[in-house]
Image 1 (spheres, rainbow, N blue to C red):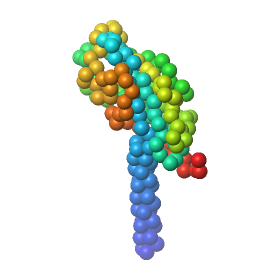
Image 2 (tube, rainbow, N blue to C red):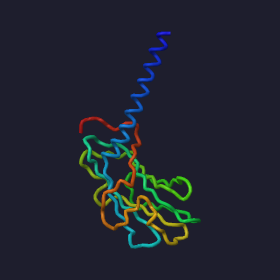
Image 3 (tube, rainbow, N blue to C red):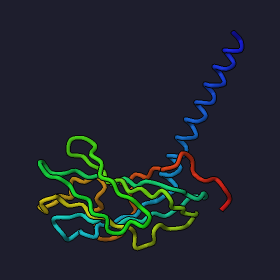
Image 4 (cartoon, rainbow, N blue to C red):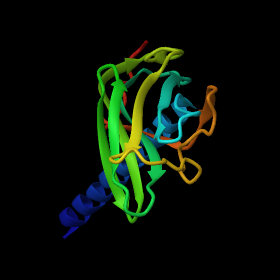
Length: 170
């Protein structure tokens, strides 16, 4: 009986430790990477062209991450995503429910050391338009910066693609 009790306690402590560490990693990525954005297609009415770069403000190297750009489509419209410049990245269009979508940018084999910017201050860029190239309403899109100028944003979420970040010396 005692043996099972100790095993149960050990397992409980182990699970709590893993969950705490995983939550810390997610919060660490969100706080460690600052996202900057502008709309390259600000003056175009049928497309949005988010241009994005990230800067590592933390003390640890980041290895692999996802960026999530959120937007809403108009009734009856089908969004199309066009990758323009995504160095070592992949792009996915994910329907969230109803008319809500997200564009997932996945950068798995990227390492950003403290103070570094990825990819550079020119950023990576993709486009979103409708299949019929009709007007794209940008004002109801959560992640849209509504500006042709660089600005920091918290409306693009950052997630790690690895279980834990590198904790080696930089």
